Length: 305
Image (cartoon, rainbow, N blue to C red):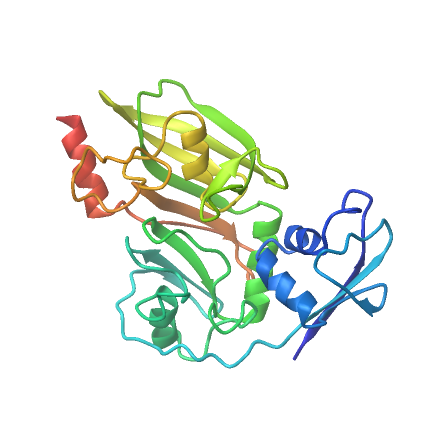
C-alpha cells in the first residue's frame, strides 16, 4: 500500500530545491530517489505537480506519495552469512570485505541482498524498493563489519528514525597514515565533490553536517590504530574526515596515497565494529560487536613488530 505524507516547508528549508529538502527530511533515502518521485508526479507543491528545481517558500505545503515497493526481481543466492544477531524484526550481519551491500550497475549478484533474500525468504522490509529490500543503512564495499537489516516495514521505519536523529551507536576501527597522539573530533560538512562526482569532500556547497570523534588506541612508527565514533552517517564520512586532517585510512585507494605500503591490501582498513540501537519491538537497547577480520589483525601484528 502506498504511503502519503504531508508537511509545511520551514523557514530554514525555504528557498532550497525540493530534492534537497526531502533528502534532508528522509535521510535514509537519496536525492536521486526523490528526483524520480518528483518526475513521476508523486510530489505535490501546494497541491500541484512540480519540478525538481522548484524552490518552495516558507509555509508552502509538500505532499509526498511513497509508492508501494515493486516486486523484487533480484535472485536469492545461497551465500554464507556471518550472523551476529537475529530475531523476527531484525538481523545484524558481519559484512566481509569486497561484498557490495545491494545490487547496482555492475553488481547484480553476489551482494549482501542476494544472500539475505535466500536466508530470510520473504521476510525483508520493502521501504527502500526492489533493489534494497531490508537495507536501512549501508557500508562501503571494502569496509567490513556490522550492518542492521530489517525484516519488516515497522522495524525499518523505527531504525531509520534513529538513524535520522543520530541516536544509533556506531563505532569503527581504522588504521590511518601518520602518528596521532591525541583524541579529537572532526566537524565539517560533507557533500559531493564538485569535480569528481564519485567522491565526497568536506565544506562543499550544499554539504550536510558531519561529526566524527576519534580515539587513539595504538601508535606505530608511521601509522595509528584508532576507534572512530559517528555522530552522523554521511557517505564515506570517516574516510573523508581522516583525509581532511592529513591522516587518510591505510589502503584507501580513493582518499589515500596512490601507492599502498602493503601490497595485496584490498581497500581501506576500516571495520564497523560496534552498533547499538533501541530494538524496534522491545524498546530495549541492543549493542552488537563484530570481531576484527583476520586481515586486520594480521596487519596490526606486522605493525607491532
